[in-house]
Image (cartoon, rainbow, N blue to C red; front, side, top):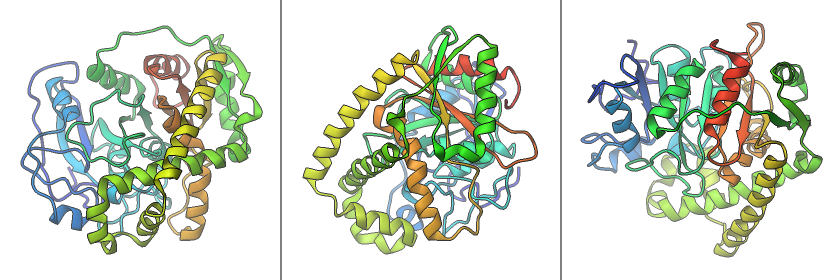
Length: 393
């Protein structure tokens, strides 16, 4: 296997052997540089973090579960610094090349996980998703990505960013394998396919409505009742949700990592350092007010989901992946629009499954199924009913 340093970390084990035979025997995986492996230092995408931390005393619970199901770990892969970006660009280690769009960013912060799966280095990968870091790189790299409900997968011995939103997630090229991996980690049984879904059509996805509409038509052909989500989730509302998410996330990042950040702020990418400095200005009162707003939004949003049958389809990202040469200020503006979409699942603690919609002639893009908490199996089985055994719809 090629050890591309922009994808695979130089530190960490080259391989982790299965500890038992199981439903994942014969499958390989990679893991993001946020999951601990006993005896090795977790780097969190930053050389100063790597140098200032000791080897891990335990292996992340999610890795041990996968090994116990017969999967073989074939390497640790890169992440954006401290998982605090959605671009996949790392000034220290480089930017993993997006196999589906080489002139575009791969998406972060689980860039290494998504790229390794998209180019065939592993059958599946695990990453983390706080603000979209599984869903976004899955979209940009044209593969499946699942962000489970908050707290569904174990985060023991894993780098923490913002506890209100941190989740472990899974990438795969084939949906049946993603389902198998998820069930191996949770033991959940099959459930019926959804009979009703809502559709969120925002002007954010106007250039890509044809692909979204293709998905909706396929659902209708499967006798799934489709309704349009009301206008309460318009662009202005999504912008407010983006800001609410950033406030809660930012405060929690500082509470978790303040001593290290005070000492090593100058080691960070300037764009990430600017986010840290902004986060340092968030007051406890603003954070508490944000938590109250989050609770109100969660109740309202889950009620909306239930009116739609428990799940909605929506754009995963505003469009195809931005080009590598996109100016930093343009990426920052785009990030706000992007986080308006990704904040929905984060603020409500909901699962979200990215489904690639590829036709071979356009840049990677797709849609997501987002459901009420603990509806992962409904999302997976509904997507399988629409996509079948293929790689994309």
